[in-house]
Image 1 (cartoon, helix red, strand yellow):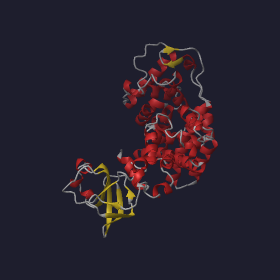
Image 2 (cartoon, helix red, strand yellow):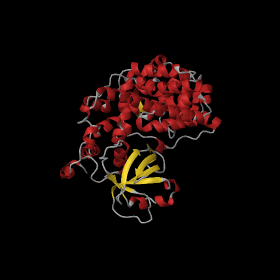
Image 3 (tube, helix red, strand yellow):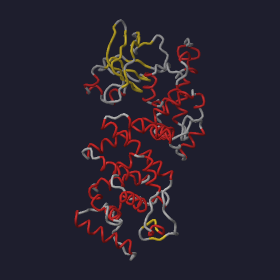
Length: 438
């Protein structure tokens, strides 16, 4: 038995309420179950419970066993002085110094709820409820997917707003940092963001007119120009330019451990992605304004054309089969989803202009759905994936709920676990106790 399951049972009243009694045989009538508390302190706040002839107003604390009260040292914590009822699954011992009434739930929770909960917790599927989701009303799922997409979007906007606070609302610098993060692709995202955080956008503006100047600066700051032994003219020119910038701005390149090379395909290697990012920055004076115009942004990304050196390279000092290293439309659209859309909302909030939020959501509703292993599995389970807004909802569901087995916090999981209310309030039959209740 998990405490989080007991929280669910209490919050949604999923237990037999008839003739409740404390462990010392006082009748209990629950008037108000209280408000769930996600912070430190008791689990449910401001509840109302009639115990005996007295109506108590205060907090509820929930544990698997009564003895957990002492294990968690609640007696010493002043936050628990207003607890009016200690709810436990099993009353394993009397705590003489605990004057708070105790309510035991053993034998009161429908077995069907617990069985479904276990089936979700023990599932190895990407979508734990894959075998049960067909029974959920599609309109409920559709509304929840939209809410999840907004939840995922809010998380990104929050990170952008934190960066704006850090950089004194410099949208150009933050746009550069956020753009760099998503050029990093997967395991190198944090490294790309760290690199951009260390390079003031003003430096890029000063050297945009110099051929390959931005490339040299970023490659050097990333630490990729160390120990260059290749005599290629392109590489020697990058090294020469970076040495000039290093002396001018006293640069300290990132350490080698920042970079991951064994994850993903060669097209995702940080050297190539950084060259593509640098080229985009070289060709546009205001990267922030470019990001705000999603059509121009997509066109600019897909038209990036690198120096011919990159036709035979993914790494700086190792050749490969000759191939032009362009950027696909799919990648450009994902940049819009992850960069343009949240940046528009952050900008709209800063300028108090709601048009930007409306535009951002319209873009998500118009872009094609993302196609990957996650979205494919979700679709096969009956979930819709018609456009990018759906995809964002599916990714949020998988990353923040399914992967972490937060089924009790998920609206879909919640509906699956809860039986119809009439099944809980049906007459209690003692002979069926062991079969119907846990």
